[in-house]
Length: 179
Length: 74
Image (cartoon, rainbow over all chains, first blue to last red; front, side):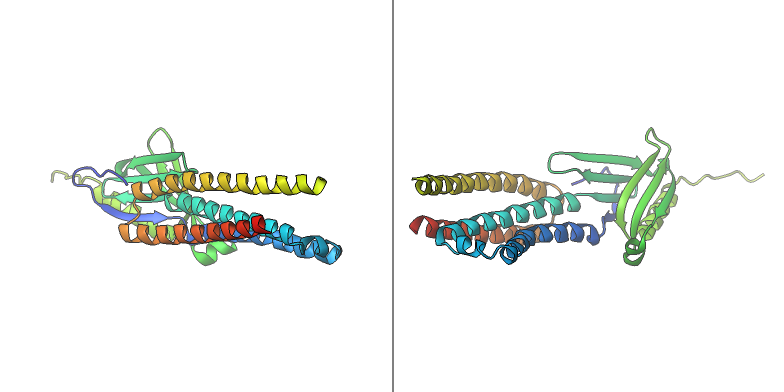
């Protein structure tokens, strides 16, 4: 996925927390059962609808469109999962690479040489994020774009420590002359 | 006459809808497969992923086809 330079090794690959894709899945599941809820509610309010729905042609047509709806939601789940999975933060011994997939046809790749990293901040806000231990990583850089923000990263403290450790390992050692 | 028109319309709608769905499924599957192969999913995981995605999709397609055939047979 990432073309590594000579002597470059991957130290860490971090992705967004599973809770993110879980919420998308839960939302799509809700969309899947909404037509059933609407149908049941409509039958409860208008019992005469039952006579129309029980007609063989109508009920089979309803089943066709119902199954199609499920298929569409299934496909959309995989599109969302692909988007989730392809958002990845790669830490190597030379640079930090943030890959962000936006939908199916857009991809942003930000590369920061380790020597340009000035500070790394972790932001964990909210009950769910605190309990599930995920949050935002803010990487301050010396480059043109001053700050890189990676949202909803899993175990952000561990990722921060890995980045700082890689940064210190990468920093050239300055030898001073003894006077 | 009205019933005939409605039935005819619904039959054509089902056929066209099925075609649109099939084209949509194939197009998206090609794009998804491109991304899965290109961007770092291991071969073993890729096999599993494809099995689940294609398997469930084909199962739902089968239901659609069978129910459509029942509709046209009625």
